[in-house]
Each structure stands twice: as structure tokens, then as C-alpha cells.
Length: 298
Figure 1: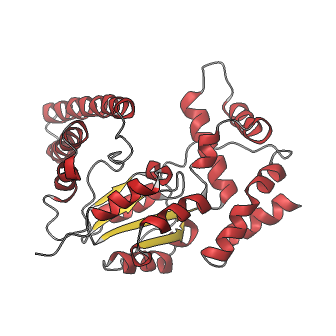
Figure 2 (figure 1 turned 30 degrees about the vertical axis):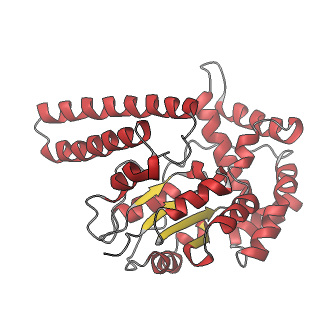
């Protein structure tokens, strides 16, 4: 019996991984779990594991409450949906909390019941993993595939900042002002380094290339992924049938905010190396990349 194919979508943060998850969730050749971000490979230290288990157990409780409500109102389609979510979350919690020898429990969680369809773990946090951990992921199956999506650097940075501003905004704070303050601190104080780290395309791809055979790694512009041709390229890499998708729909876009004019050119200068790297290593820049680069340089 041949080894099952596995898919890891390792990022980048705010670069279209949720859109890809939905597209693959609806694909008959794929079987991603109901939990998009498994956080198995980035929870090996005890403190991180404990925090993740708290978050997952909280979500499990919410699923159980939603199921009980749906059952009481006789919404059987929702009951079935929540049953799947509860089962997947329960299994994942057991895999993270239990014996990780050989990563066998995680592998069973990811692949059981997929029946020849492609299972997927799509956790953007994996983009900062060190090479030895990426090698361990790749070793789980000789058919393990890795996808890393990259988005126009300034748009990705601003989207990530807005997500942080929304998540941590206090009642008295103005959202747009908070977002711009975060960007100001990144540019002038070197703070919030984790936001830049999650979008450090050259560093992430260098680690991936050191750990993953070239034929099993696909680096793609998310702007192209949203097109029919780009999604067909993704399907070809994954070994699944190309289907028609709606590239206009966005997932988890978050609230809008306007970036301050005085910060934009400084941010582009900070990220300039990412544009140059992408043009050299991935291919011709999509129009959105070229446009932002020109506006930032003006």
C-alpha cells in the first residue's frame, strides 16, 4: 500500500490560506480536517502546547454548545456539521496532548477516513519553524507536499497589522489610529517583529528549500492563485482535478483602515528586498505588486 499524500500549507500569514482552505474543502479530491490550523508542529515545547490546548478546548466547548442548540431546534444539517467539528477537534487535542513518538497519532488524525483524498494541515504559523522541524514534517510521508503563498508585501503587512489592531484594541482606542501606531512602531522602533517575521518570504523559503525536495514545494503568488489559471496550477501540483473557483471572494479580510501617507514609502523601503527576491525567485511580479512598489517609491 502506497504512502498517503499529505498537504502542508505553511503560510504566509494573511496571504490567502483561508481562501485556499475553503476551495480545497469543497473539492471532491480533498479532505482537509474541520480544524484548518492544527498547530501540531509548532507546539512541541510545554508552554506553547499548554496555551494551544486551552484555546482548542475552549473552541471544543463552543462547538458542543452550538451542537446542543442545533439539536434543540432540530437543525439536523447543523448537528451533523458540528459532530464533524467536535470529532476532529477531539482527535486533534488528543494528538497534541498525547505521545508524539513518530508523530503517529497526528498522522492518524490527519489521514484516517480520507479514503484516497488529499488531507491537509494549513497552519501559517509553521512558516517560522526551523529546518529540523520542517524536515520532520516532510519525513512523515514521502508524498508530503508543501505550499507557501506570498502576497504583495505591503498589503500583507497592513492586513496583519489590522488583524493585530482588531484583536488587541481596547474600548477607548480608535481602530485606524491603533493600526497606524503599530506600523509606526515597526518602522521607527523595531517593535512587533513577529509581524515582519511571518511575512519574511526569503527566509521562510530558504528554510523550506533546505528541508523539502524541490518537487514537493510550491511557492505561489496568492494574487495569481485567485485566478482560474493560478488555481489550475495549484491543482496540478497537488495532483487533483482543476475546478472552477470564485477568486473574487475574500476570507477573513478584516476591517478596513487607511494607512498614513507618510508611513507608506517607509514601509515599502523596508520591504523592498522582498519585491526584488520575488521577481528573481518566483517569477514576474503580479500587477498589484508592481503598483504598490511604484506608489511607495513615488
